[in-house]
Image (cartoon, rainbow, N blue to C red; front, side):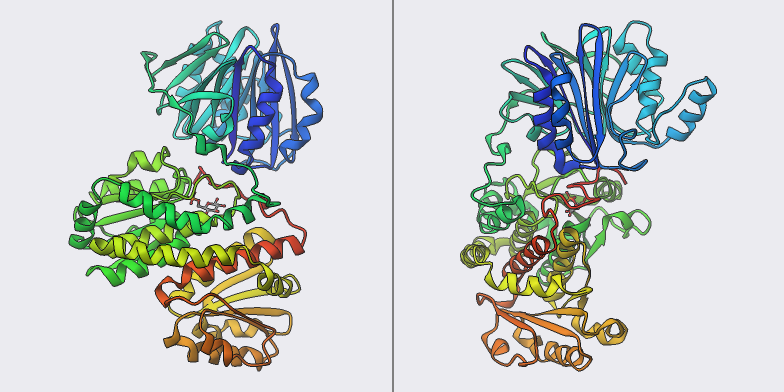
Length: 589
Ligand code: BG6
């Protein structure tokens, strides 16, 4: 996904747009650009690379109206030419989303003699606006978006108009009102501290914004009113709390994610009805992407133990090609930190289409998934800025524990509160994590192994390491290693073996021996003193975590593996908050 921002008011636009883009970088940071408008002239600066590169250009971007963009590339590499804004005639535009019929439109527009300067899909919007413009920006935008197929949040400047116009379909847009002007942005996070109130544009809306005010129209150009509400204070994201990176700050918020999610759960009205839905379900499916999918694996295990029906986790991107057969008695749980991931929204829509009851487990209360769901179970982890999910994953686990506990949720919450205290202590102690990180940093590949519930933690721990260190890794059931992957094991490969379930220790110890006997490096991470005491002296490292029962151990072992990934990233010189090629949530399929 990408981030767009726009401003029109009494203050110079460039600095405001730059600040907002810095807050939107989690949405993508392959390239960035700004256009401003002053006395009928459009000034533009855009570069491949991070938003920071725009700082040197701000002085040349005059005017109190402008648009900005930070990009996660979908069409075309991260070059200056492919950076937004895209210009055509009297227009400059920024776009978040994907134009599925861009090739067909390009062919038509080239046939009319138009020249394209980028490989992006978005540039067609600038040409359509220029082609349909006859002095009325609103009409031009209406005709332009009528030609588009796909998803868009598009903001446009016109040299003839002192303001901007913004239109959306599927990709999010919030409007904001501040003391010195008016804003539009992909996420309210971008305008915190500038806007005091905000509203969400609905699909099909077009807003015309000038330094004097905003007017919103629906897709038939009927004026509409969207409800404004105060900009939530928690969106501020807070300061770094003494941490050098958001990733460490957010790992240290894991404990609060557990306790706040418990509190949020019991504030939900209708949770009892939810338990009845789950108890009567003929099938429960969970779906998500990335870390949210990995949380779904743990959720499926917990709910499978709790309810007498088939429970399964599905990768959202694969859901549409092989959708589980659901009925009106089925329950689908869409798990998504941002609530905006296109693959997950698509899967949730399919489930809804089957008549299933849709539960959303999300960290973003005003997101698209909440508008799809029959019930929202809030993850109360607070804004998660680091692209790699950490505290939101922990909060998702807490949600699954409470959903699995049913009428005993209050008692389970008590258990979660006690494990949270252990998580908090662990998150502030990086000593052992740094030891294992040094082993990861010097390895060609890292396997994460476990059995039972530890497999879910291993899979997520592997993803975390890949995301922030770029080291090849895979998460596996420990028993599976010998059926093929063991062929990759040699002295350049590290295997991190989790042992948090007493019943499965001996089988994990067999895997350790199989690896050691082939010269592989091993690190053991366990919550069990007995397993720790019997660790082979030939392993490279062993870490005894705070003790807890097996079904709660994933809070602790996941926190440990997040710390390992974070410290590995530092050792290999990566930016743990903004890994290359990634974005916080991908709003295209
Ligand atoms: C990816 C992110 O783009 O989307 C991951 O880099 C995330 O960190 C995944 O887990 C799913 O995002 P969400 O918002 O649907 O949980």
